[in-house]
Image 1 (tube, one colour):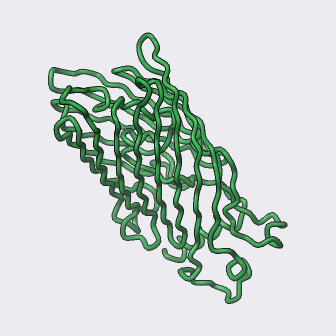
Image 2 (cartoon, rainbow, N blue to C red):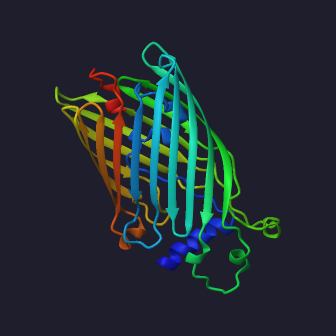
Image 3 (tube, one colour):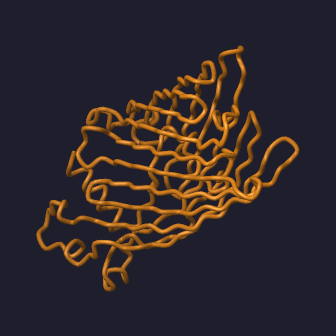
Length: 316
């Protein structure tokens, strides 16, 4: 399987192949700044989020990802500013993505509309020492640079009410060259580029009883020429503190039609400021025979100037 993973990674570098290139997170509903700059400032309080994901544990060279985000409202909550730092490692590849977000927030009759812009830079590196070449002296390896620095930009729109949210975005729209090939090789049709990723997100809250609420949420991901990919989550919220739910993730395979994974999600709200969350993904695709599933850990903190109770950031 190590050879299989390595071959797949190399194909992404040396061919005109399109696929999902962004890291995926099961707890996407609490990590929105990564996907949509229009969300910046929507918590109406300064907010920090840190998340770690280990995908397909037990499979050598499998992806590991970390994200750190901060966003806050300013100017009487009419403007939101955000910072996202994302790290993604897959086999010999290592990517660091840093983005600054700006959102102008327009109060409407029932909610708030955020229109966001994002500027970003990605440092992309390949450690060729980890590659076990089938053919010694392969020019695609020996003549390739180790790293590159790529600028990018993104846009997003996010609308939220106390009981509903919806957003559409493309966090990076420029097609930077990540093939790391020399001048002679780039003159050929052997090339890999960053593909524009588009996201549609939505969710709402449904009161069931005094102490129980139901919160469905979805994240649809689109990349040109890549398989359709969507997360559908349903979570129960008990006493506004304990979350328990599951996600069904479509996509992941063109061979096995049962979807990519079934994901279990649990979160606990500590006071009004702190949240801890965990997720475990059960693989459904053909990779299920070669890994022990995927897991995530999320930590989130809101800075409050007083002890006023708030509810909307708790849900969205």
